[in-house]
Image 1: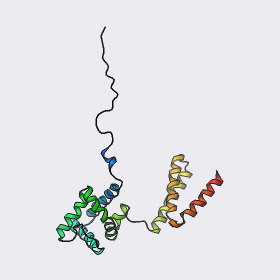
Image 2: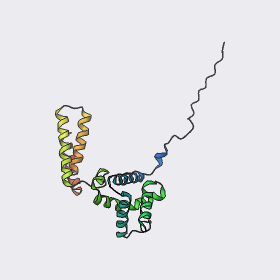
Image 3: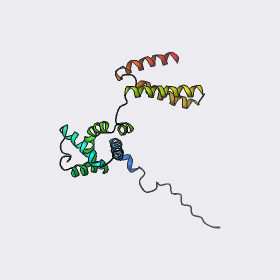
Image 4: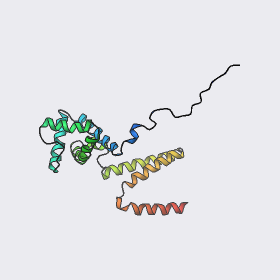
Length: 188
């Protein structure tokens, strides 16, 4: 007869169970969006884009009375300091970039509105909201008419309702939702 040894170890494997990215604060998502938007703005700007962008942001920062971010001085120094904030994530530069976000968004919206819209930094106009609502409602009608599965109809319905809500002034949302709840209670 032979003896067999079984190793039944149910202890957890050594190492990190939680991802290192789970501990990042939520504001880092906003900062990474701004960083990506500035990089796209840099790629979309012809010529010496870094000097041009950093000078626009620095002038606006100074016009608003901003101080303390080392954006005043030589063109080269301004460029280096600004793009250090963009390219180097970390607590120090995140804090600086967070104070610059309103300036960056305003300058980007004036200089390259396409990039600002692409990254969701500029609100849609009334005409854009109307076009989006027409498109979403049309998609809902189409999937309903074609007999799509319920989950697809629900998804398109939610998107249509969200797009319609963007047409209504935010002050009136309470009235609209109150009426909607009344209708839903009557149906159920």
